Structures are given as structure tokens and as C-alpha cells.
Amino acid sequence: MNIAATNIILSQNDIQNCLERLANQLRQAYTQEDNVVAIVLLEGARRFAADLIKEWDRKIPLYFLRAKSYGNDVQSSGLVEITTSDRLLPDLTGKRVLLIDDIYDTGLTLRAVLDYLAPLQPADIKTCILLEKHHPHARKIPIDFLGATVPNTFVVGYGLDYAGKYRELDDIVELEGM
Ligand code: 5GP
Ligand code: MG
Image (tube, rainbow, N blue to C red; front, side, top):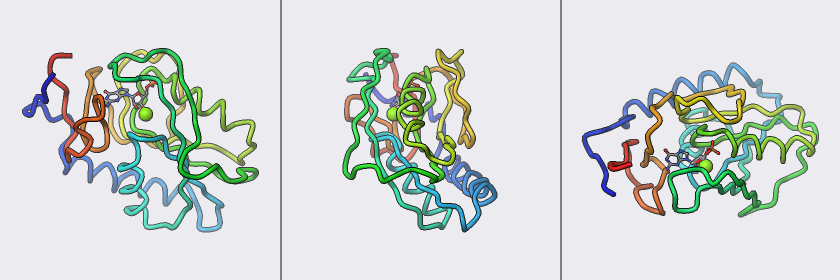
């Protein structure tokens, strides 16, 4: 499998525009008084979350969850395994959770994570997702802040990998031969 270098789905410039638009929406959605906690799904959303919070220009605590459903395959396995990583989650009671992920594909991952977080009794949970695939999604998830909609192809770059590769690309590109 190779990178289809010509098939750029989102250029660096497009990504920057998404970040600016999302940051504006976040400024409107949350006041300075809101006790916001960002929960970032590893690994794919790490770079997006870091850039977004910098663009938002607000100091909010970041926590990480690992939610794996893919392995090295390009199809969802249908099983989602959640592990807390790096730091344990804080007490979320009464906090406003901003859940940040890279892609809303089948929706199984987001459904599993939302079901995991809900019993921790945050004041609310909003979802901020960089990319939504076109699909009919297996699980319908409300997305509060969306970067862009993309075709149902497998994409890499800007933090998104295929079997651990291509994360460091600055554009989001289609993986050839899928
Ligand atoms: P879902 O559970 O919605 O099917 O899958 C969501 C997760 O699968 C995303 O968070 C992402 O990690 C991974 N994923 C889905 N589509 C793609 C894709 O096109 N490229 C990459 N690199 N990961 C994907
Ligand atoms: Mg993911």
C-alpha cells in the first residue's frame, strides 16, 4: 500500500481553516467560567487536539483515553477496547467534557467512549471530531463540532496512521489501493 500523494483530502491550509473555525465555535460554546476538561482519544487525535487547543487559546486540562477497534486493519473490528493512558481521568463530576477524536467512521468507538464517560457524571459531554466519513454510520452519534466531511476512503496523515505509519504527514491524504 502506498500513499496516493496526489489525492490530498485536506491540505495543511484546509486543516488550518478547520482549526480556526472550530476554535471560534468553541469560544462561543464555552464561557471562561465553564469547568471544561478535554478528553482526547489516542493516538489519532493527539495532534489535532494539541493544535485545536492552541488555536482556541484557552488553558484547559487534557486527558487521554485509548480506544482501539482497528488493529492494523482498515475495517472496524466491531469491538472497542478502552484503556486510560498517560494519566488517569480526573473526577468528572459536574465538569463539561469536550471529547476530541479524529474520525467518526462507524461510530462504534465514539458510542463506546460516550457510554464509558456518561456514568462518571460530567455536567455535559460535547463531541469535537476532525473528520466525519460520508457513510450511513452503524451508530448515530451527535457531533457538536465537526472539522470536515470526507469520502468513505481510508485516510492518513496529520496524526492518522496506517499500521503506525504516515502520522507525521502534514496533509490528510487518501491511502492508495484500499
Ligand atoms: P469507528 O469506531 O467510528 O468506526 O472508528 C473510528 C476510529 O477508527 C477513528 O477514531 C480512527 O482512529 C479509526 N479510523 C476510521 N477511519 C479511519 C481512516 O480513514 N484512517 C485512519 N487512519 N483511521 C481511521
Ligand atoms: Mg481513533
